[in-house]
Image 1 (tube, rainbow, N blue to C red):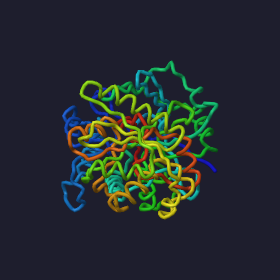
Image 2: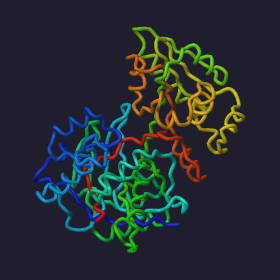
Image 3: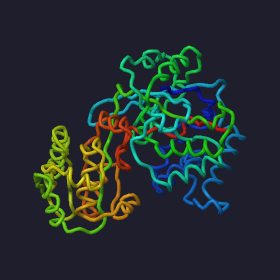
Image 4: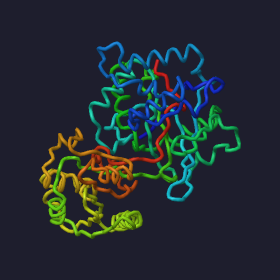
Length: 433
């Protein structure tokens, strides 16, 4: 068992020519069309013009996003907007942010790691992926021969050897705050002693893919596509961000939103077959106060049993759902592995969405009549604005459950977790040629 980590042959923005605030972006899969337009207006060199150049994914069309990204990438290299670092390096990233009035710091580093097949069990996935995004990212990688964003990996080191070895008094290489108010302080690590320590600490670890499953599987597909006979070829590695499980690791749920019409009281009766239901009634004056109590109750109850929330259109109530019945018989019908039976999303998808509401697996994978929403506020807003019929509000996932499921060789449903904060694109590029 071993994870092989190497420094990056890094390509970075030339900060003498651009302001980092103007060129960073979140990962491509959380960027809406409107937000992409906003990012493009900030700077002609915003990284969105590499990771999400336009909406055209037709590889037979000359104006597709992959050709546009390649032209931008090459031009920026020629014009010195993007430059290579003097030496191979590892970038150490400190993210400072505030959530629910609490100040939190997450530390990690960006490096290259050898791509491992999942069968080796050195790198563990925890979610299923979808073909469309992987095809899109593979086309981009083939054209540009670079990783523009990182895979997010989690390891465990209670001694915090890497964190304790970093010189926090050095001048940051980058210090930039994103649109969500997350401060990203980046140190460039290029001394051999620290790099060797990082390589050694990771050498006997197992890593869990926290975020970026599509990016990781794309890297596997690109490696197989190139099929280099050189063991040290750059295509055998992928750019990843590593963070210690013992650090402040905040994981948000991804909520399930029904957009296909369902009569509210029919839905609640279906739910009551399996769940004890507790009402949180509100009016125009106390809605926010009641919502806060409702959300806290979901978290409190989920520590004792499978619990979640439900909010429906045109109903002035929030519903706390606490699993009452043993649903193993239904889960066995769907051949759910034992290790997944205690997962709230599995119970929701199999018992309510599949069995009671009749959604097919294909509809759920394609998000046909059901959406997977990361932002809690959006899950409520879609109901209030009449854009959806019902929102299932999920409890915060627990890293121990994710680790347990991954180690058993199983995966959670697609779009189960949302590790916060997201990693920025634009900090560094990993060339593959």
